Image (cartoon, rainbow, N blue to C red; front, side):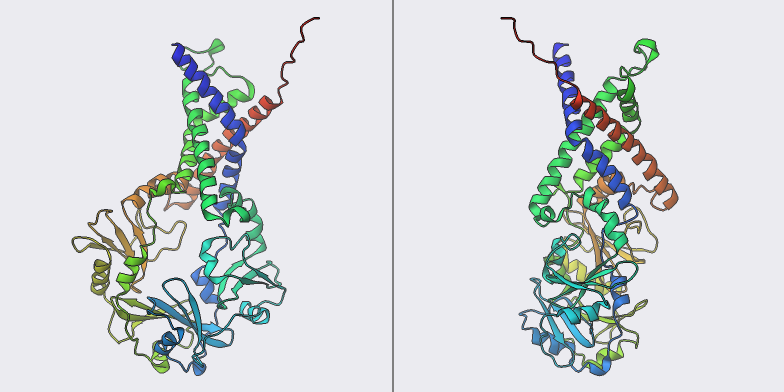
Length: 482
């Protein structure tokens, strides 16, 4: 009994001081998370990028894709590259396996140099100011490293749009609006602890968030244990109360019992989203798998006329990709996409399966399923998801699934055993991506607001209790009489 009493006291002290130290984080996470439900972190989707491009000026395309590849000087042909307009100039944009990028003029075959401020303004379609930035709040992550620095072009429109054009390649990398920037300062920046100086140091940022959220997990779990421990439903406290607390502490206890499990699941799943100890695999296949799926490099065998014949007058981008050593040409307009083999053959599912079988280290060919409707693991609630899609189930050690677009052959997603576990530990618990909610948006919204409101009351009452504890005057020491 003495040991139990001591343990209870230490648990109470731990919860109290963890709440005082981290209570503000709880409140900020809840409020910013609600913002993020409706205003995600700024990014440029492929549809937005294509909508901004102008149709390819075929009369100026004099260089074929094989000549452009040779002009890069890269030792190996990449698995994919593109043809599109850079202002008034058609260009091939080519990236090597190590991320090195080259921009080749489709008119002259020359490597093009950096983009100046005036050219960046023309590419962005703006008429406002141009500022050169290496890294800021919206381009802080490593995905932009190969495109730095940027010309940030203000369009001067009513929405306050700013577009980022890579100085290195002339690519449009990102656009943001005043609405997105404003709400993200109280949304993703707060929720992810995303100040630029910290986030720019990826390893340090990861460790800081893991430790803060991990300690917060202890605070939430200790509160759940204490709340159940202090609850009396049979042998009640005086006056028939089920809780020994009064005032604000009473509300904290009762709401903690009602919403504590939700708050704890939010915090723990948020901690898991940082992938501590690398428990969960990436949804992107390893580079070696992608290289094996593409197959050996070979000549495309198309001249400018041959490429043009696979496109339409409205085509704004051509994408050359390789599957199993054979080239595929994807011609994209603002609203449509046409896919054809460079050699005139038809891309079929059997070829996709053969290439994937050679890429994934498994002992047998995969089981192939063609999804024509969304399910618990392939759904579009937060991201755009193609249909139909091929799901290839392998018998490798990680029980890998690959989701592949049968129209383009693109590997859309890798989901192995750890990824499927993460789908339930993070997506289900943190995003509420439950089967009964993901296909019923009004119910999902209602559940988010109700459960977050319960969690908010717990956090706010805890903040008030902690503030009062800190403001409580300390007893004065009495000097002994002389």
